[in-house]
Length: 207
Image (cartoon, rainbow, N blue to C red; front, side):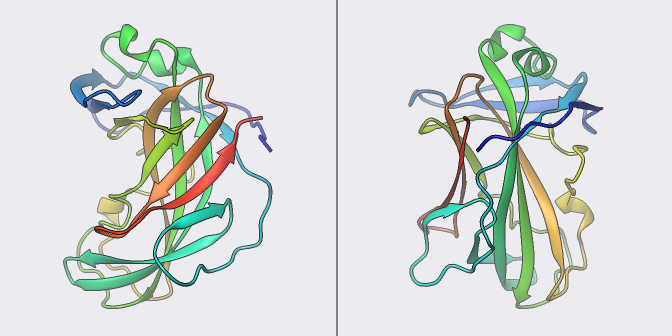
């Protein structure tokens, strides 16, 4: 079920967003987008579910609050993480237009921001920024969204992975990823996968 919250203003911390378009199965296109200001979008969450660690083969469908376990090759070595997709914040078309250089690029689109909690379960302490969130992707109605690099850097509740350089076992951090998706999407999905692995998919119905 979809829950809403008030919209709060935030300013992205970078001067330029990299916009990668991959809508409706077309070939990827690239463009630059200027950051102006955006709003913390309204929150989309699936029905409450108790956190549980998935077992068996990599990949599969999960509900909000359920956890998966995956390995990531970090600079300091292989780290096992517990990953939980908590929610996806969905904004408005007007907010999306402020994030791109050409408002036409955001016509009919909205900013979707995923919030994933990563818990270091085992492996070496990180000595540099983490790559745990690099494989996070947002889909809308089965189609991959358009990546907006940096749009969620200063969003409330999100951490910058470049600031996490001494991550020890047992510690958790929340990383976010931002994509443009159709504003009338009926459902959103957060995909995360190990390298060359099948994705874990968290579904967030928009109803």
